[in-house]
Length: 343
Image (cartoon, rainbow, N blue to C red; front, side, top):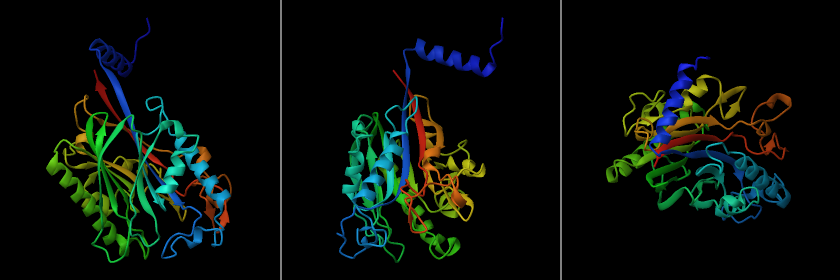
C-alpha cells in the first residue's frame, strides 16, 4: 500500500472534518489596479488638465483609442478569476481615472457586465486631474458608507484617500483606496509626502477601530513606495511576516514577494512593487470562521507584458516614448485572497 505524504494526509483529514461538521469554505478576492491614465476624450476640465488626452491633444486621444483602452482593461479584469473566485474580485480598487463616467463605461463592457460591478468614485483636487475609485460586486460586498480624506500635510494638490466601509459576506470590512504622492524630485526628497500619506491612512484605520474594534481594514493602492520603504514599514508599521502582527497592526505580503524579484512596474531595468494591498492583523491571525489571508498574487499574465525591445517582460502600457501601443497599463494588478469557513 502506498504511503500518503504527511501534508496531504493532514489536508485530507482537515477536509473530512470540515465536511463532517457541515461547514464549507467561502473565498473572496480583493484586488487593485492602476489603470494608467484612463481619461475620456472630452475636453471638460476647467483647468485644462485633460488637454493631453483629447483628440486635439498630444496623444491624439480619440474614440477608437479610448474604447480600445476600455476593452483591454475589461479583458484584463475578466481574466482575474480563480477556482475559488470564479466571478473575479469581490472588490477592486483603481487609480488614475479621470471621472466616474470612465468607470461606468468600464463595468458596462460586455466582458465583465454580467458581474454587475458597482462604482464608487469621488472627484479629487489632484493637479493632474486623476482620482481613485472602487468597483465591487454586490453579491459579495454590501456598501454602507464612503468618506474621503484630504492630505493636508503637503503643499500641493494630490489624490484624496477614499474609505469604503461595508460588509464582505456579512463581516465588517473597510477599504482605504490610495494613490500616494509621486517620486517627483527623487525618492528621498519626496519621501516625506508619502510618509504623510501613510500617517493619514493609519489615522483613518485607527478611527474605524475606535468605532468597531473588529473591523477588518485593508489599505490598498499605488503607494509610489516599496514595502520596505519608510512610509510602509515605519509609518504604517506593516510587517514582512504575519506571525505576531497585532490585531490593529498591519501585514504586508508584498515585501517577501519583491525580495524574490517580483514587481508590478519596472523603472531603469529594476522592479518596484508600488501596487500593494496591506491587511490589518485581524485579517491574518484570526479564527478560521473569520476572514483571513490565504495568499497574494501579482497578476502578471503574459498577455499583459511587452514582448519585444528593451521593455520585454514589462507591463505593456498604452503609450511608450510617445508611441501608441494599444496596451493595458504600465502597472500589473495585484490581488489578495481571503477565506473563511461557513456553516
